[in-house]
Every structure is written in C-alpha cells, then in structure tokens.
Length: 406
Image (tube, rainbow, N blue to C red; front, side, top):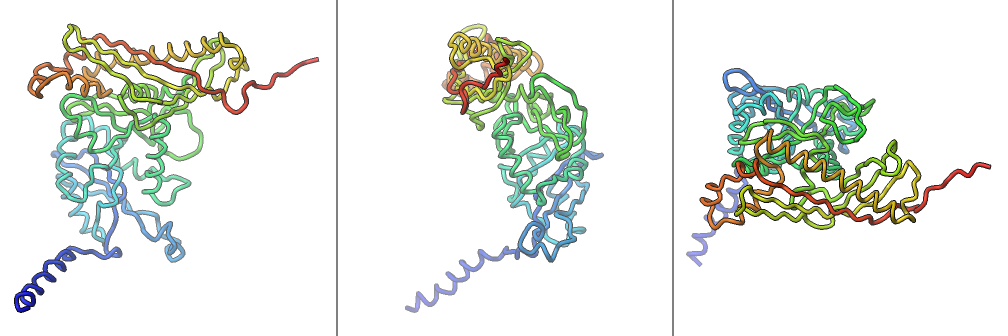
C-alpha cells in the first residue's frame, strides 16, 4: 500500500500533463484558407482567411453585422514565421487544424521557391498533408479577397462543397500536399487550376477550357477548370478540363468514377450526343521495358449511359446506329488521349498517368529502376491506347417523341 500511495501522485501527474497545451475554443482563430504569394528577397506574402465561428451558427443573431471571415496578409520568410508575426495583429491564437485549402499564385508556383515553401511548412504539426492545393492565375491574396460565393456564408463550407463537386465532374484533379510529395522524382503532379479573372471563349466541346475561359454570366466569381502541371516541384504548364479528364481516365484508379460529356452525333454532324461515362473497372496498363522503344499498352473499359440525343435519331432500336455511336465515342476518346500523350512526351517529358508504378514493378531494385530512367524512356515510348465503351442505357424514355405533321 505504501508503494501504491507513493506512485499514485506520479501517475496523476503524468495523466494531467497531457492537458498542458490545451486551448479554449474562444481563444482560437481557425485559418480555413491560406494564400501564398511571391515577395522580394526570397520572402513570401502569406494571406490568412480566419473564420468567424459565430456567422452561420446558432449564435448568428448576435453577430448579424459581422463579416464571415477576417483576411490579413503578412510578409515573412516562410508560412510558420508569418503565422507567428500575424499574432501581432490577430486577437486570437491562429490555428491550422481546420485548414483544408491552400491557394498558391501561379507566379510563385513557376519558381523553385515553391517547393521550399511547401516542404518547410510541414514542420508545423498543424499542417496536415490532406490540404488541397489550388493554383490561382492571379495573386493568391487577390483570389481570396475576390472569392465571395453567394450561396455559402462560411468560406470553409464553400471549399468543402466544391471539392466534392470536383470529384464528380473530373474537370480538375484531386490534388493534396501528400500527392505532391509522392511525385517529386520526375513524375508529373497535377494541381487544381482556378482564377477570378475572365477571358471567356466559346468551344464546341464543353470541357476545352482553362479557368477563366468558361463563358459564364452571373454566379460566383471563381472558376475552377483544368490543372497546373508540376515537375520536380515547379509548375511547367497547364492542362484544359478535357485533358485533365483524359489524364484521370488513363490512370489505373480514379477518384471520380463517372463524368458527363458530349460527342458529335455520327448520324447528324450538326448535333451532339450527351452521355455519362462510367468507370466500371480499373484501367489496364501493361509496360514492356525490355523492348526499345518501350511499349505501353493501355485499355480503358467504360460503360456509356446515353442521356440526351438532340438530333432525335433513333439509337435505341437501330443496332447499326448504336454501333456507329459507340465507334464515334471510342474514336473521339482515343484521338484526344493520343494527343495528350504526345503533348506530355514532347512538352513535359514525363507523364501524369501514374504509369511509372507499373514500370517500377518490372525491376528488382530501386537502383535498377532509376538507372532505367523511366522519364527519358517515356518520351520515346510507343503508346497504344484503347477505349472500350459499351452502351448500358438510354435514360428513362427510350425513344424521344416525334412531331407528326398532317
């Protein structure tokens, strides 16, 4: 009993010290969006969007005239230093535990300084690797100030909902800090591309746009479309929404399992047919590293749900027409995929399709794989891509109504 009474105070002391760094919720200022811009002398301008917890909550009546968030920008050598310096302005202790979105200006992303900023920020234990990376065409501070969505008062909910939509439509990749760190050895990393500026254009294909080019009237100021391409931790180019979708299709596994797209009607060229493409099984990738040039064979199985046929051609009952439609979709997808592969080979000298995982399996050691120089071999590789669409359904009403004139 004496031994127990002697040990008991130490046990309580050990347990209670876990609360030594506790913080009351009222004392914390939760940063929900972080923006980083290039500054002079290798410094960065860090923009903090701090949520107002009362706005959008049950206590909103007491904060009726308060803004949903507070935005301030601090120039410092790095993110952690800027966070500490911001405490001279912010009344609450800044906290990154709810941070889920990081906005990086394209100006900074195209420099080697970008990697130093991202890599050093992970030293803060509050910086989670699930944070999404968005590359803004303009300065990150301008992007954050201009983004005032009409349907979402709370900024963190806006980005959370948008991230769900991005997975649904496939116009942008699912880009996190963790995925960025996975592809620093020459593989291409795709980040989300966005802007609040406008330079609209009109395309027949609804996904051949970059952020800012979508012909929009009204709505929220932010456009998210396409991807920023990174190699060795530096932005080297962009992909349109269509190219991003194709890149995700060519990956072994995809986060988004279905997308809606339109294709030229093979029976009436002036019209387009809108379909939903479903990923029913993983993309099959086979790489032969023993041949020169390297051979890459990719097969993408797809289910096709025909949604709209504006031309009113009867693709339901006429099996020949169905084959024509299926062939038209197949040829369109393969043509776009081959063009994208050629672009990555000639312009980027690497691939964003995660095919390097299959090439790496062909070697016994990492040393052998590195000596093989996959990126160099890929630029000369012979790539064969085959899409295998099969029509699954034609919607709720099989045959569209026709007008019978007397």
